[in-house]
Image (cartoon, rainbow, N blue to C red; front, side, top):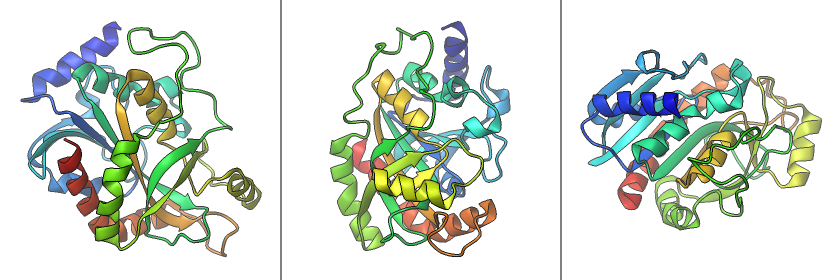
Length: 270
C-alpha cells in the first residue's frame, strides 16, 4: 500500500479539490482534454510510481479541471498489456482513483466493430464484457484494502448510468447502440476466425483495453460506465486493411459527437 499512498498523496498536493468523476480517454479521443477548463496538467513521468504511455495518440497526462462546470480527473492516455506492462501496472491508476475518493469511472476506447449493423464512427454503450482469452487482473494475492477476493461481475457497468446515457446518445448521434465489448491482449489485430468466434460468443466490438480497468473499478467499488468508438470494422468483415493510423483518423471524425456525449454525461451523473 505504501506506493499507492505515495502516488495518491502526490496527486492530492497538485490539485485544488477531489472530483467525484474520472475519465480514461482512449486512442484518438484525447481531444476531449481541450474542453477542460481551469486545467492542472500532471505529466505521468512526474507522478511517483506511475507508468508512462508509449502508444501514439496517448499523451501521458493526468488532467484536473472542469468539464461542463463539473470537476473531473482525466487520463489523457492509458496503459496496455501489449506495451509490456503486467496487468497490475496497467490498472495501477484505478487503485489510485479509489484512494483519491473517485466514485465514478468513465471508460472510453477505440474498438473494431463485430456487430454487422455497426458502422465506422458509431458510438456504443458497453453493457457487458468478454475476456475469456486473457488472465485475470486480480490473479495473485488479493489486496484486501481495496476489495474482496471474489467479486460478483453481474453488473460491471452501472445500469443506472447506462439508462442516463441512452437518451443522451440518441439525441446527439441519432441512434443508441449498446453491446458487449470483447477484450483481446493485442497488439495484433484479431484474425477473421477469431472475429467469427467472438461474434458467436455474443461480442459486438473488440479492443485491447478497458476490461482490466473495469474489473479493478468493480473490485474497488467504483461505479463504471463505458463508451466505445467503432473506428474500424473487425477483420474479415470487409477488405479493409487494419491500421492504428486509421483508428486515430476515424476517432477524430467522431470526436464532435463523442465530446458532446461525455460533457452531458458528466453533468447528469455528478
